[in-house]
Length: 146
Image (tube, rainbow, N blue to C red):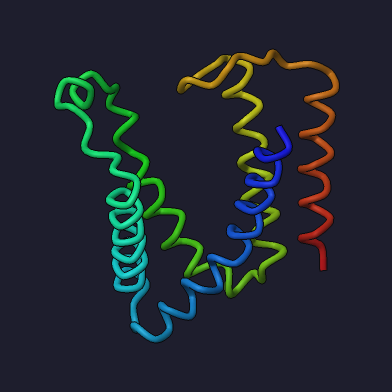
């Protein structure tokens, strides 16, 4: 569990860094879509090298054909996130950008957990969980105040 927590914290740090890195790339490219293409291309290359090192191979056609349609949307969702972050994060600032993203993620996450949608383990609404999400959203509102 400690390793999982550390990896999640590391991912949170990366989420705070990524918009600035991608925005810098976008400013050099002249268009955010060009920067998104470069960002995903370098990510693909990194994954390809790591995949070769660990010899992960390619999934079978049968496994890929059995996937629900929504399982194919991860790259599209990532493209949206990266491109929008390039456009919006520099204007909002790191704290405002991230608190809005996290508030939206947390609000949707409690619904996904409650119903067990998209393969998440089912965790019902509880007063503590609902209050926690409300407090998070209120915290986001306070951060947004000038």
